[in-house]
Each structure stands twice: as structure tokens, then as C-alpha cells.
Length: 158
Image (cartoon, rainbow, N blue to C red; front, side, top):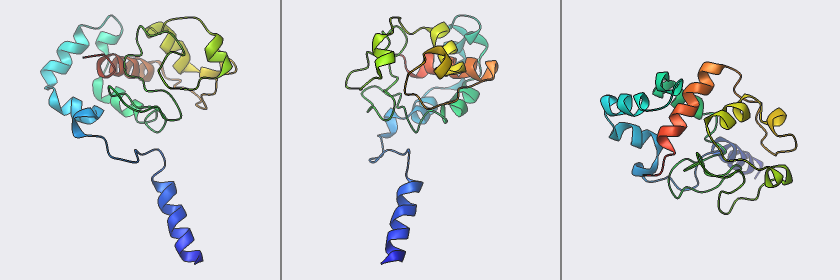
């Protein structure tokens, strides 16, 4: 009995942060990336405003791996511990449908843009004290730039 319980707990913990049902291949960020040629990705990045036009897509994708356990990015993706980030740029803070935000986020008043996201990602707790995001932040400027550029490409409404 204990062995069965232990195996169940280990299996549950190893699945932590993963989708309960696998997303369709077309909706995952990796599938999106493979659907675009390197030339298409380079053109998309080149069209971004500076300094994001100089970002590295693969590096941004790797940094986003830290976010995946709490956030989805695909259109129609579920909210997890954090809200779905699809269409985050240009969206009012605290406005992702169906997500229960902290009072700090509910009382904030701004629209997400690259600058706001950069400050948030550097240290969410100092940017907006009282929010519930349990994440220390991305301290490295280059990693934040790559992550924000990745989000600009992958979270953009089609």
C-alpha cells in the first residue's frame, strides 16, 4: 500500500507543471517555431522595435521554459497558476478572462507593453508589491530581452 502511494506521489510530482491533457501540436510554442522557417523567424524579429529586434528566439524560448509551469501562451490556452499570456501586449493588467487576480493586480492600472513587462520580469514583487506571482524574476537584461521578444512573437494574436 505504501509503495503504491509513494509511486503515485512521485508520478504526480513529476507531472507538476505539465498539461493534464497534451496540447495539440499546432498550439504548442515549439510546434509554432518548427512551423516557421529560420528566415521567417528572423524577419519577425527584425520587425520588432529595438532592442527586441536584436533578440535571440531560441534563447527566449529557453527562458520561457521557466514560465511554462504557470503560464500557457497559445490562443485559447488555459489559465494555470498564472494567466494565459496569449495577446498580453496591449492588454490591460488583470484582464485575462477567467483568471482570479490578486487585489494588487486588480487595483493596478496600466496596459502591458514591453517596458512594463521588462520591469515586471526583473522582479515582480518590487514592481507590484502584493501580487501573487511567486517568481524571483529574470535578473539578466539579455535574458529578459530575449524572453520579451519571444513573447512578442509567440503571444501575438494571429
